[in-house]
Picture (cartoon, rainbow, N blue to C red):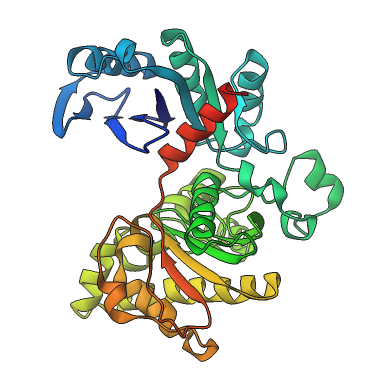
Length: 392
């Protein structure tokens, strides 16, 4: 029994064939540079990686090529017990507080929400349309925003003119919700407690933080779009919105230039010249003062959110680090926890240095807050939610 999980980007298709019960990824692949002069495909099955360079004009050609790879290399989907296709969709607006079976009505709602996620929903939709055409099984959409539908109005509503905000659906939707939900549930299982006040730090090239009380999200750092919040690989995170007016008036920048600046040319890349955290550490360790300053800004923003969310929740039981940076950067974790020492949060340095694929504690036993590393698995979460929907 398997689920094919598809994450369709503007010029890419990421996919995994997942066993939702065991959690195993049976086959993994990536199609890149769709619509460009040369496309690249990677398909991994039984430990063997197969790579191809060819021209794929659109997502239809890309997914057809992938399905042929399953037949040619394996596993053959007709024999793999595929029960559903699970699609990642970034923006579900106020319409979806959980996964949904794809119908024509649901498909049209995803399209209707595209203005709230213009870089993501149209690409997600292309993957849905093509997969529905080629794969005659139930299709399920899982939304990044769904987990954050529980946010109280005080956290979700901006202090923007109410009529304008409601007319144009401006509110905090959050993102990375599938990961935040998966990780917070893993923390509850690991600790044996459902009554936790948790902070989840999803730290990758895109980064977000959530406050979770008794399994429900009460606040999150990303807002109307994934631009708000933490410092990220190429995004500013929090910034005075009047900077836009200033750069428009004084710098003569138009909307497109500002969008590109804030989303693709800022964050670590804009501060240090590199958007990969490993490269920033290498520069900083080599004496680059801008890279060191970028790390300080990054950590400062994290600590600021941890403190504010602890106050919002009226206490704090656990902090969970997850995603690429959160799971693998022991230096960053150490710097963050060091700044929290005055609150009795203590790091076990030896535990922090251990590399593992398992959930683990990295705080000392006498720490006032339990600090954990929790590997995320959004594909598995999507597969399991898809099975839940078709089993109803």
